[in-house]
Amino acid sequence: MLTLYHADTSVCAAKVRLTLAEKQLEWDGRLLNLETGDQFDPAYMKLNQNAVVPTLVHDDVVVIESTVINEYLDEAFPQRALRPSDPAGRAQVRLWTRREDAIHYAINTVTTATLFRAWEQAKSEEAREARVAGIPDPLRRKKWRELVDIGMDSDYVLEAFTAFARLFLDMEAVLEKRRWLASDNYSLADIGFLSYLNRLRVLQMDHMWKESFPHVTDWFERSMDRPAFEAAIGSWIPAYKIQAYKEVGDPLGDSARRQFAIALERLKL
Image (cartoon, rainbow, N blue to C red; front, side, top):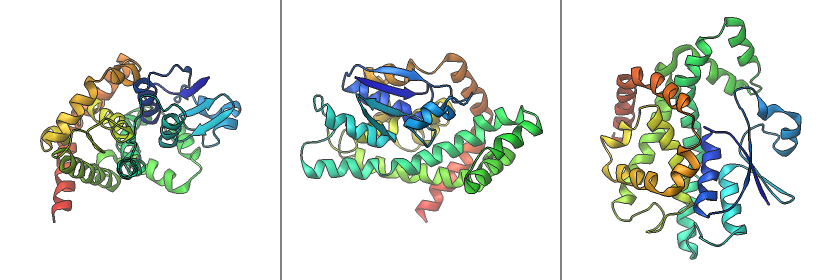
């Protein structure tokens, strides 16, 4: 039996739901509310001491970290394989999936500088300070405070946009030659980035690839057209959250374009 502990808008949880959908596996879900702190429940932290989602339980086996979970699912359930059968092809998948941590960090940066910042600024100063004090890692605490204080003007945001620009440049070069990232077949490499790009889309930042990277644009549209997208992402994000992302992202369009242009120029020098 497969049980997935997940959250509706979590990009990492969405990655695993995509794999489950593509492989047409039956699973039981435990939906956590990250806004109210379900991830810190002692019972959940016995499964995942990092207090993050997703966590997969397969019978008596507990697996954490979305990239690891996806690899586990593809190995445990080899039907409808999401990795090439040859070593060279699997190496290509791994080269892409090992980049997911950097993109996750960048997505976290942009989400904090936009949506989370809007939420935090609506709170009292006392509540904001309590939220900061609850972050155990001093580096993460410093980053959170700066992003909430100055938002898109933070150097963290430019660093994130540079990571996106580098990814899109590399994706564009590969997608000029083949249909999907690792080969001509859809794989875990494609699944790994789809939820991240969708987060940028709902934040009204899909201009990053639409205006500069036609092959990435085509890849994203074809990925969204797959039935698994609606099953794993589209049907899970509540309409009010989609609206919240839009309301936050719309006014930041000019700032996002400016930052992304600077990031691209950096990489071309």
